[in-house]
Length: 312
Ligand SMILES: *[C@@H]1O[C@H](CO)[C@@H](O)[C@H](O)[C@H]1NC(C)=O
Ligand SMILES: *[C@@H]1O[C@H](CO)[C@@H](O)[C@H](O)[C@H]1NC(C)=O
Ligand SMILES: *[C@@H]1O[C@H](CO)[C@@H](O)[C@H](O)[C@H]1NC(C)=O
Ligand SMILES: *[C@@H]1O[C@H](CO)[C@@H](O)[C@H](O)[C@H]1NC(C)=O
Image 1 (cartoon, rainbow, N blue to C red):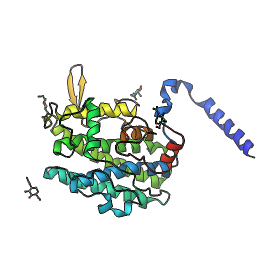
Image 2: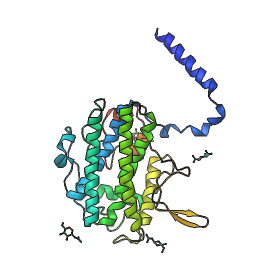
Image 3: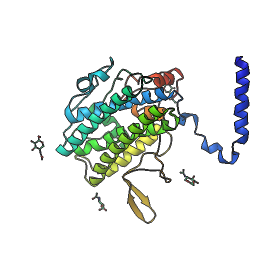
Image 4: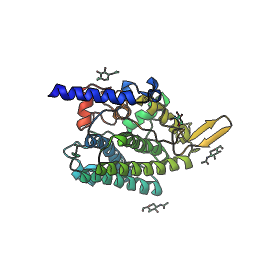
């Protein structure tokens, strides 16, 4: 019985392949194994992204108020550990208000996901490390040198912008990436809500960055535009699947143009896979080697699959 349905399946695949216009599928269109998506059910794919939404919620709430998920939304902890390095940032009033809203929005998105469908199981909060030293490590890696004095992301309104945009951008790219594979009206609506919220939030932070692009970062000899650029290059290097993050300006033969909202040349939004996100959040360029923001790794069915299959 099983072999008969296998045969039928094989026949169907062959039949479909026979009618696939071969000229449209080039070998170069198929991504290398390291850049392929990790397959899972719609609910599992959405669940996996909650790891990143949780880290985002922790980061924005801590920066705005000094209080993390365990205080603000204890119902979302699910037995996970308290984060490392929760810090109230030294922000001006406008930026603090924006960060408070984004923290609130992040918590709201996670609650919305869990309430939207009983197919999506909660996950324990992974160990999250948003300490000055850990996030400063990304700044060092971006410049390929140990910054002196050590980079303190929470020191002022300028220092915090590039890293906070990265949290929003990566999670946005993950949900864009899974959206073609989501089955069912309810779950599709969940993903489009997340993508739209992440996109709006990312646009707000990019605007703040652009307004301050020429501001020299305190204690260093570079401005914020340079840092945004270097951080984008670091993220592209760690993720290892192409140049998807970009700086605030694009150079052309006849001049430069603003690049507040990055798009591909065809105005499609860049997407990233589960493995790309882990390589960046772990800071190791290896989806099976936890570190940095998730020193104990992440949770959920897709996370287990990545560990079991040793995907890196
Ligand atoms: C910022 O907010 C604090 C507390 O609400 C207030 O005391 C202060 O005057 C505000 N500063 C500015 C520059 O608006
Ligand atoms: C930053 O400086 C450049 C060069 O002087 C200028 O063209 C640009 O408009 C400035 N950006 C902002 C946001 O003021
Ligand atoms: C953009 O669209 C054109 C026309 O459909 C296509 O030939 C080209 O490969 C696309 N470029 C990218 C980067 O997707
Ligand atoms: C990634 O990390 C795992 C776990 O430490 C290790 O077994 C594997 O060899 C690493 N992969 C690469 C490409 O370095």
